Length: 320
Ligand SMILES: C[S@@+](CC[C@H](N)C(=O)[O-])C[C@H]1O[C@@H](n2cnc3c(N)ncnc32)[C@H](O)[C@@H]1O
Image (cartoon, rainbow, N blue to C red; front, side, top):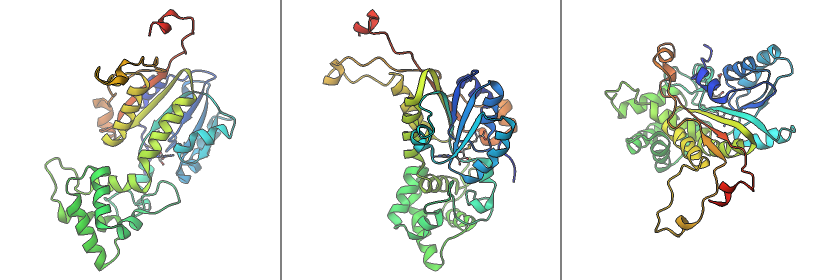
């Protein structure tokens, strides 16, 4: 099992700009690369969440290196508000989310995330809930096709779902490689060199872990905890995640398109935005990083900063 190389690490540090005495949340602890970098960069405190018990167990080593400054919490970042407020943390100077799976998870065949090695078709980041095998072997063909289409953007979703249902009638599909072979028999490799199973595995992983609703909730709750000057930094790995992050940040910064002037809402004054966008375009890895870490290729970083509230007597307030 290899380690996890943190992606866009220096760009994340630049965007979050940790400072001495600050309180930060790393909502996706993983291999602890971001957390350790934050703790090294400033005399700050980090609360770190991961839903994977194995990630939290690995964190004990990092906590020993930074006595009293790292607090590890096993849980879903969708529940960050409850997890933090239960411990008396009601305001933060920064939050970072590095979405998706870690190399520890991908490279451990027994976790069932990868179609490159044989393992049980599990794909759960945590230890509870239905596995990918449960879904593959029980869902109706039309529901399987819908998952592959909406969460994997797989255009051959119906053909793949039909092949899965035919194959499971012979024997339950319970390994990663059997599912990958069923998909490859339906879809020839395309010119990009992408394995035909990639999009379907992505879709199943997102569905098994209910990832997209968790991101929506975490963004809103993380932003609500930020102090003025506090920053939210998110690294996403595929377009569905990045679209949610981009929309959230653009709206929070008041940069969403205004309603048409024919729409009555267009006549109402829009409230002053509470955030500013730090990244007008997503930050992507450079050639040097890509040369040492191919897994970084689709990473995109976006960030916002909470603005200080405007004083009521500020004339620019009433002019709006
Ligand atoms: C890409 S890795 C993070 C790597 C980390 N930044 C580092 O430097 O080592 C993503 C981690 O987030 C965790 N994760 C993903 N979704 C989560 C969620 N909804 N709640 C909590 N943890 C989550 C995964 O279990 C995984 O360990």
